[in-house]
Figure 1 (cartoon, rainbow, N blue to C red):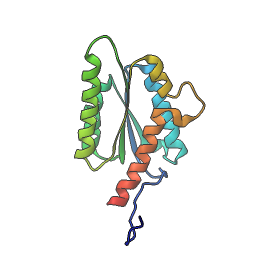
Figure 2: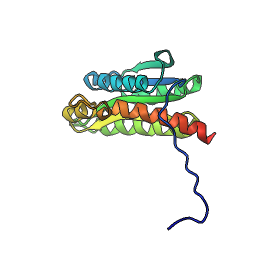
Figure 3: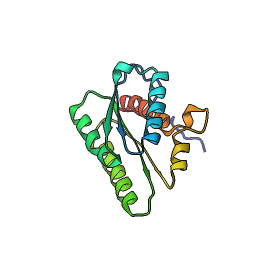
Length: 164
């Protein structure tokens, strides 16, 4: 069916020049989170974001991501906040609490602030699954979920600018 009036469509571009990004990275599971960070930094660089416009903030684990992201958003001066972390299922319910609170905390920030907040937290059953999602098993950098989170941040910054 063809609409009788033109449909307006907005989408963000993938050009990051002039954007300022904060990457909040959990130190827990560093073999995974460092790969995610590397992927995000490579993506930002390839899409024109200057190294001078990137701030990396380290937190102990995924639980602390929303709190640090909130402080960054309160301070202002960034166009996007991307949270990177990894929670791997264990033998206790701890996984559900940490992953759930990280997701809900970051989700609240994404709706409460006019700045994009990107969820780049892996929640996997095994370390092997996490390493695969961190792109350590392939040659395509876009297989890295840190890369994917960073490209989402760039696109959302541009989309928010279009939306006004």
